[in-house]
Image (cartoon, rainbow over all chains, first blue to last red; front, side, top):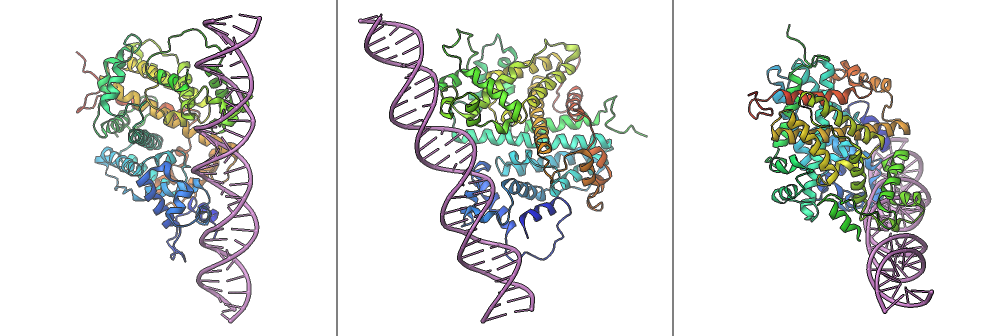
Length: 244
Length: 244
DNA sequence: CGTTGGATACGAACAACGTTCGTATCCAGT
DNA sequence: ACTGGATACGAACGTTGTTCGTATCCAACG
């Protein structure tokens, strides 16, 4: 079977859980690919690097994967498989959404830089649709308007991917000790306070806040921001059903 | 003067508006680079393509630019220069923020795919700091807590870039008429409704909403979502000062 | 006005990337 | 045991970003 046929099938109907393929193949490839990413980052995942990790040449990979873009799709699909989507609880829909986003974030950060691939991905891969379906279910259970639910789900996933991409890039630069970008917080704060205060008054004054935030405080803030916005219906386009 | 020195200077102090350089150089390069992007997309901007657009070889570019990453930085910097940052009006801070984000979005979309470069950029380039300063000023004028203001500004810019990247990629795929990804709305809706309803009940039921939205309805929705969240202070970490 | 020295320009080449082609190898079914 | 279609892979192609050595320019000095 062609890898192209495999790929087209992944976008049309769920894999029917048939008998195992004759020789272990595609899942092995994405397994070792994820291993390479976890160890050396997404930028290190080249076809050649993956091939040598499998003790073979680059050409052999194209028997299992139609493209590098296809490989990326498989990787993100595998990531989405790991997410556990809770049964919607109308009383805790905001916490549930927050939890799903945090899971997604942890998966992204486990494989540094992979969110770059997620941002360039088609939204029709079935595993991605599955997590979209899960978030949609939770939001609808929270009595959010269908239109607002799908738009908010999209915005949340988009933000999670962008946040993780930014974080991965910063970490990667810190690892390289690139001198131009301040890599630790004190250095960054110093850089901001050293700016000319007449042209950047607020930036210099609030340099502390700019570099503040332990762990994922910034992440939690933004997710809560969006969920708060959802809970408070805008007048023009109601995003939340009025109580009966 | 080395291009490396030029680059380091751009991150430390504003350019002192000195006399014009002896031979027209860096600005010409970024000008033609932006022209190439506007005409053929960011993916088409290779060092060689840019060199031929300047009637020279690839090596010559490295007299003005230290890197391709450096070129990206200059391009985003130029984009940020085009933004007009309004004087903060406490009565209209939400509209002002919305306007700045819309300007940023239009700039990104004018040069398709360039938001990819923006997402991979250091936040210390001076022109980027300038727009951050502008947004910070507006948010602070809206009586938003400093911590919430800087975090919200970051989240907004991050979302704008991610939104434009997604949109540019979708347009580019539509231009190529790639058969796997449904490129017009009807085709996409058909794809969603064709999914098995037992595993994707909400996705199939709300396929219309998933593909709905003229122009930047989705964009406006998300920005408003965040601004609404800002206006409604969360109890634990107040994002907006209580009225005196 | 002629010369010189440091900055600028560029042809040629290198390493690394994704990808393709032709052929060799495997293995199930007759 | 044999055969045919699927799988594997060495070698190569076209592009990409980048560097090196040298040629060229141009302002300032003698």
